Image 1 (cartoon, helix red, strand yellow):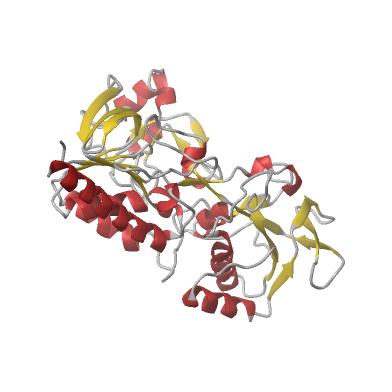
Image 2 (cartoon, one colour):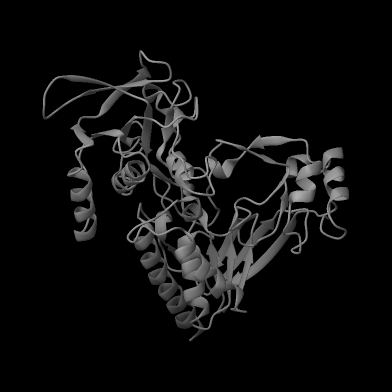
Length: 415
């Protein structure tokens, strides 16, 4: 029987679960697909309830990871299979190379020699990055990565030659790590629902239609626009902004469930907009506003009282180009005021739903429901958005509970 615990996913829930379990005296392994720990929270400008930047919670947990010898983490890694049972799981993990050493923390010499630029995934394609990069300024681990697509090219050799000696190793190969653990915490997180699947909402076809996560990256000081929310077509500040709620959620053709976070994310982003652009008019098209709890309801009430913010109860049926260059028209049926509404705005924001990673990437040995959420069973414990749609605070609470359940499993089996 093993007293070790595996955490799949190094987002906010995953690292919270890991440090909690490690501080209870158990060896913990974190396996994360991305180059860095921190997950979706690292992409946010601010998060509830205090509207603080990601550094608030992430830096504390990163320090706890750095100073705890019981925690081992693998980035650019994926669990390939899980076999066995509670107390004695065999896990195979594939770790992809970064083609750099841990001492490689400054990418600039290599970037000067790089010629390839590709869409920056971290910023949802709103800017580009070079073939050697750090995903974002507070990336942990703070280690440059060479894009595997160029690893065997002359460009990669040029990058290696430009970097100080010993920092780039183009001979690195994928490795398989085998772990023996007593319990598995699944914290594989979520991804924004693909807006191109909703043909009627114009994403990718109509200028100046963006998603809520794209707005979050624009609002971030480290984002592609250095904190300014602008229209992608001309980089101008929008004077009117329309939010399309439930874009893909509560829809039998897309995500049948409520994604929980979308309403509060929109209210938060309205505050970003009103702080940056005091004269901007905001229109919110909604089915109903879900602001669970006393604090969130108070936040909603404050936004609703803003005379520049207009709430229209109606689901947007169509998004199309407007009459002005770069403008967008949102078409809906106002179920309270009555009649068809065609609201022209400078920028349209789709409040896209939260889809669990398990909807597209499944791990052998883990059970999933029809929507891709992890089904718990003894020894396999989901938390955060792998279990259900939740916000950051609820995700952390779920992670702490998962850590306790995992410890109970290994202690009970060992006994």
